[in-house]
Image (cartoon, rainbow, N blue to C red):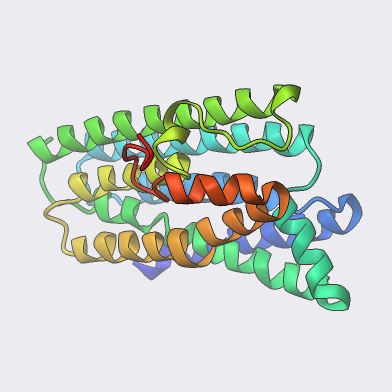
Length: 259
């Protein structure tokens, strides 16, 4: 298995190294998010089309699924990075780290390179399912993928429309899915990976997909996703965001508490 992982890990690390050099000139570290999306998708495609023991049609479907996921998310983030100032999270990182900012950025970029491969491992699990035909778990996986992708697309579009309206500057988005979750994009992103757990049922390394799901949830809720995003939102929106925190579920979409 490691001989399949090493090439994409090295490639991901080199890509992040290049982008680290580029952000030295552009002062925009948002490209790391774009690269993470594409690197994760490309790693998944590599797994899908180099693991030859899996059923060819299942591998083809899984490769298309992760490729479409990465293309959509990567292009969405790319357009945002190219049209906006550097994300406040990264500006704050530069300011708070002072003279060590670039060293911290370097480590951060390389961690993202490793996470891209780590989070692509459920694809490896899915394509090592030994079944030589499509099973009901494969169809359930496709349904989960369609539902989660739709949720991600809707959440991102609603947030983008809100941000593009100058009348909303400094306000908190509570439109659509954002009325029921403070991070619906993260929720549907996490849900998306359950598609590969379902498809991978029967694999000898099925446990690995579940482990990655737990790690992903911990990272989203406790380390990189929600904490950093909410800290930046509190700095930029203050009491309005504190009120939003009191009213709205942090992750799973639920009715607002004041409803």
